[in-house]
Image 1 (spheres, rainbow, N blue to C red):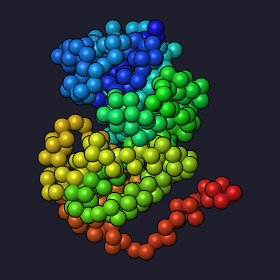
Image 2 (cartoon, rainbow, N blue to C red; image 1 turned 180 degrees about the horizontal axis):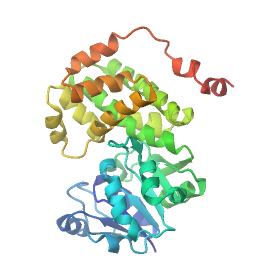
Image 3 (spheres, one colour; image 1 turned 30 degrees about the vertical axis):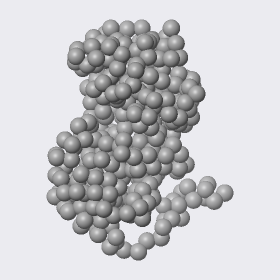
Length: 346
């Protein structure tokens, strides 16, 4: 029986443990508090994933060294703003040969680094050969119930991605591989900004037309930023791009969409986040992406307006009107005037 360590004990960490455990793996979750560990060891994570009976191969502990000792793979299931801190604390106990899987979707706000870049800073460039991002359209509430789901495992080294593919693949959990680490990370992070926007539009009681426009043009600016940073154009048409965007912008399981709805209804950012009662990754990512777009010289109008609403007290309705009142554009300018146009047209 292989041992898999999961850093974190929230809804997504627990759901992934449910995927791994039936495959003859011993899965140990690192919980921040003993009371949460006790709840999980009782057979259900009633605090973060209620109503789902946990597989008997799943356990939880608060002792990091104990959780990581002998682990063949380490899954980081903590919010992006906690990733560096938890990585630094855990590195002394991680076997240098263990594969590290990160499932957080965000940017490090203070440095504007992608999380693989944070990992490289702390663990070293050589360690990136065993670092894999698992991303795509997935809600913990559905994965925990074995509802069919497809994700992508991305790594600079295909053997590492294939290892994670084999580790997680089940009859209801399908994993594809991708070598575009930049694109997969950016797609997973930036779609949360657009989900905030579609939520705001819903809160304003706009319709499906507005949501479709927000998602389509949101994908365009995500792609624009991604291309400027070396991502593959095709990644954004896949699971980590349009797939994750669709599920996050349309589902009430989405924390970002729910937060946006409350803002559209008139709540302050603080009130909206509090109403969700869990981490809303898109808030920090909006601020990080706004600065990143300025640095890259990339136009991201939806991100700009959401930033103004979240952090500059702009009315959500004014933000939508600002988007609608922009100058005329060629819809496919990202393709027509980019280096990828030749490849796509061929």
